[in-house]
Length: 252
Image 1 (cartoon, rainbow, N blue to C red):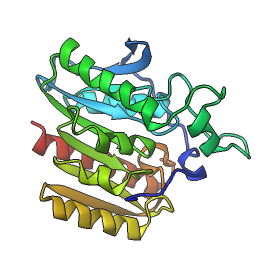
Image 2: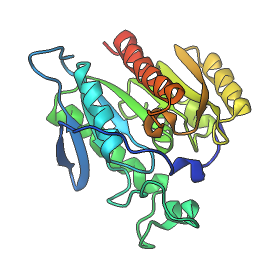
Image 3: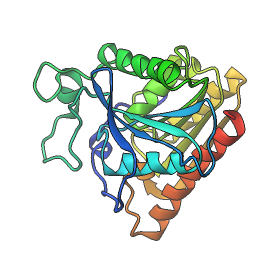
């Protein structure tokens, strides 16, 4: 495995302030959030970013981040990969994330790859057919990183991951396009040995890759970091810029 399974650190963090400006929509039967570039500004034609979220799903922070990708010219779709069953931020003590993954909150709504893959595939098709997207980038945070890796074969051209979890070595190896990874210095899900193994796999693949390590932060920093703390704010902002610059260079 190129990164470890999810843990408690995948569910905790800080909600950020701000007002989102995109639209809550449906892609098929699944909820989504669409952030559209301002026509008066930079708009990258026929290009989009698919945002595959952490287990918190579509919420304040992911919407604000999608808006910022749109402000940089990218039509951005945040997808509910959990069939209406995301994990609440900072869940109560005793929350069993592996039970939730296997069965969902109601016992009949699993979040395994057999159920998540079709949701991602439908979103890629929707962007291609309904929005005319010809060049597709994808960002995956924590849980979402696995599905960036898995869906190069179904239409993702350029990828970005932050603090990935649950990514198998063969999945990472299967991403045959440019891939950028943002990693936390302290991360039991993506520790140094997994990071170094990922580097070896990407080097063997021969495609452009980048792994940036941010000091003083932990798993989840790129989405749920505490921006009232200077170090975390800096790392979060730089990880976002890392993604934008990666897409600017390899997707356009």
